[in-house]
Image 1 (cartoon, rainbow, N blue to C red):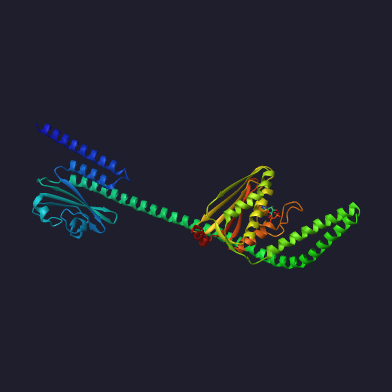
Image 2 (tube, protein in one colour):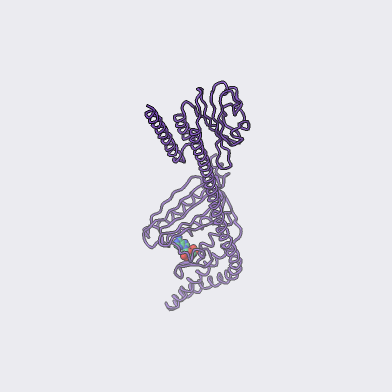
Length: 435
Ligand code: ADP
């Protein structure tokens, strides 16, 4: 009989141990799932504790910002004896409760309070309370301590995870900001480089302009005299029926002298510093008129012309000079195309920047990087002798600068070029036009 009692007792103990082991394994598995939502994880663990320590009811009170979140007694954490002493407490009814609460004292027969501590960090307390008088054995306390230490480690790990995630987010934010700053810096450097390039071109052109002005004045007058005398001599030679060879030679002399005269005229307009006769004009009208009389030249080379014009491209400028710029750009575009291809002119009005942009693009030869920064130099030409003077772009550049605008080029060898000219928008003219 007594042997049976012993057996039943050890079986019960064995079952109890098995249940406790199962709970420990389950809690261990649960805590291995980090990072998950800590609240859910803790509720699952509390449920397990409730099961194993029945009829005790488990509560978890965490310290946030130095205070116990919700204490079993709703009083301050520094009154919690278990937490202060960092030792577990087991109290029976009648004894002073660890938290000195009337409510607990009246409702619960037994009260176990275990501090949650990880290293030197006090995290909170785990309490077990029972309304029935149920003894809390030493074994149970050991099991509870093991579970509580697992909870403490889990909370600490979860907090570390969330701190890490926060740090990671901060780092990513800082990284994005650094990248943005870097991009802005890169943009500023590019703008600065472009401005510097423009400045170098402007300075070179100013020096060349000065030189050309002096030279052109010196050459222009004697060339005028030579040309008129030559034309007169040619007439005389023809009237006096001089040999054909002499007349032919004189015609060649006239032709080349005229070329010199054209060049000096170009030099003079390049060196002209002021823009006189400014008037409001619609660039679109100018583009349409200019392309109309150049169209036959484009057709002879089988070149398609495409116009995309934004309305009200009003600027204040010298019509003759701006037309000269357009003709220069269109002639260059035509020369860059061997046979067949496309030239397009696109005007845009930027009301925010108060600028008008005209892009002249061609599907021609393109410009190599080696010569791209020399094409605005006076007398730079890659065209055959007698075809190019090398003054078109430098004159255009100067004209646009004098109008408060600019001329830029983008080009890819073998694909084509795009010259874009910018001029300040003339707003009053636009309003006047509307009225
Ligand atoms: P020119 O036309 O008399 O040569 P420019 O100053 O107008 O003088 O042009 C200088 C040089 O720039 C040209 O000889 C040519 O090499 C280059 N160029 C200008 N426009 C273009 C273009 N659209 N496509 C290719 N090269 C061009």
